[in-house]
Image (cartoon, helix red, strand yellow):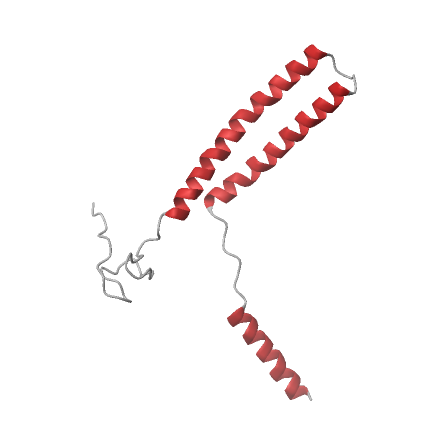
Length: 128
C-alpha cells in the first residue's frame, strides 16, 4: 500500500515537472507599464467622479472646468508614456531573437554562425 502510494506520488511529481510550463516572465515594458496603467485608471476615475459631482450640483461650472483641466493635464504625460512603452513592446515582439534562422525559424545559440537545424548562414554579428 505504501509502496504504491509512493510510486503514484513520484509519477505525479514527474508529470508536474515535465508537463507544467511556467508562466513566461513579464517583459521590461510590461513591468514599466503596470504602474502607469494603474495611474491612468485612477485619473479616469477621478474625472468620472468630478463629472458626477458637477452634475449633482456640488461644483460650479468654473470650478468643474478648472478641476477638469488640471486632471487632464496630469493624464497627458501618463498616456504619452504608455503609448511609447506600447510601441517599444511591439518592437520587441516583432524583432526575432538572436540566433533565429530566417529559413527554418529555429533558434540557435548565440555563438553559432550557421543554423543547427538547416545549415543556413545566420545573420552576421556586428564586431566592434
